[in-house]
Amino acid sequence: MQIAGPPAPETLNEDQLARRQRIIRVALQSLARSDYEDIKINDLARDSSVALGTLYRYFASKEHLLAVAFIEWQSVLKMKLDKFVPAGATEAERLSEIFRQVISAFEQQPRFFRFMTILHATTDPYAAAISNSTQAVFTRTVEGTLGGPLSTDQYAIVRTVSAVFDHSMRNWIMKRMAIDNVYEQVDTVIRLIYHYHPEARPRVSSTSSLPAPTEGN
Image 1: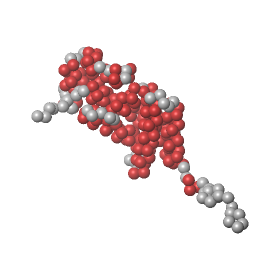
Image 2: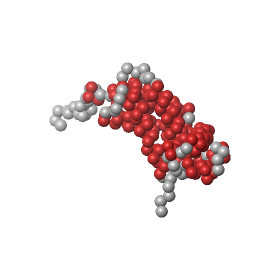
Image 3: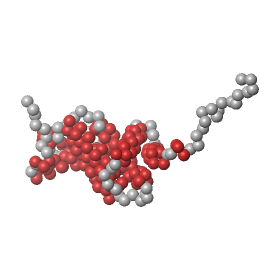
Image 4: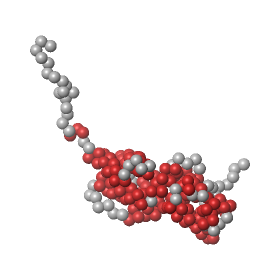
């Protein structure tokens, strides 16, 4: 027998929607001040002034609820980024500026990035569906910065830079890297993608380092 999941927000009446939003707001505040492991679902229900059973009518799990809270935070970040006008004259400069804005946002709210790494590994189907949408949200933001839909090459560039960003940020939240190095690594990969031209460098002959043959050899 299939069990119906939480109702979609658009199917809720005004009171239910307000109650759901109150729960999300409490979860958002909790995620900003506490690590995922320290957040208790019972506390979220209590602070939202709802019974635990009521909370579970709207959200399938703690992961699901915090994923919804995370996407709400990301939506606010997207609105800020959409209003941000990069000063860079080149595509590389504009891309660097938008990634710097994202790094700065996570620098101010490191627990949100830490939770994002948990979200990407979740087995909760509702949380996983939200996780899959996070990259699409960011891609739409970058599209606006770069002047429209991304070409195949531009999409590949964004994915490559995102991989370096993700790796560097993970090292940062694990205290293996300073935040300044995160900015530096992202800037470096963008510079290499757009400005590194190995064919312009003088080629060194493979035999140039070998000693000249002596007479009789």
